[in-house]
Length: 142
Image 1 (cartoon, rainbow, N blue to C red):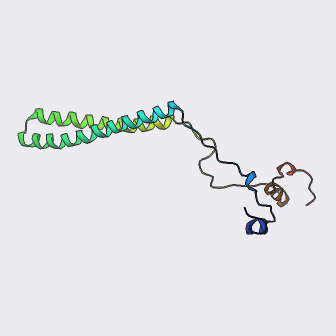
Image 2: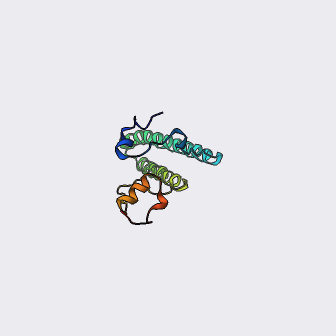
Image 3: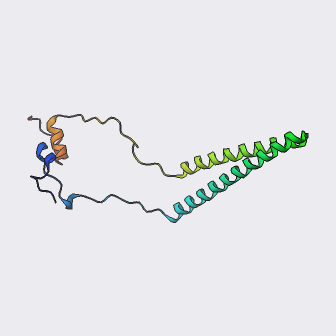
């Protein structure tokens, strides 16, 4: 544990460093069974869509070669149907991603703070840093 003399930042700001008892552990949210099942289902559906798209792409390559060699109209119709099916599978994959994001609870507050503004006097800021937030806006003798 650091003493006041060891903490250069606290010394330069004229503050007392926090003791180990004052530090609170971070909150860890446990996932519920529903969240775990939702995550598992999402992963399973996602892997299935990947497999369908990969196998469909392999099949498409073979069917295109066959259609070019045979020059039969039905072969080109099959190619067109497979392309439509693969396009739909790709859209389904993106829709699945969007639905998963929609099901996740939104975080409270902004995810990124780019500008932070304190409005008050130097005395108010010092009181806030020392933990005396109640004295902000009180008497104005400084």
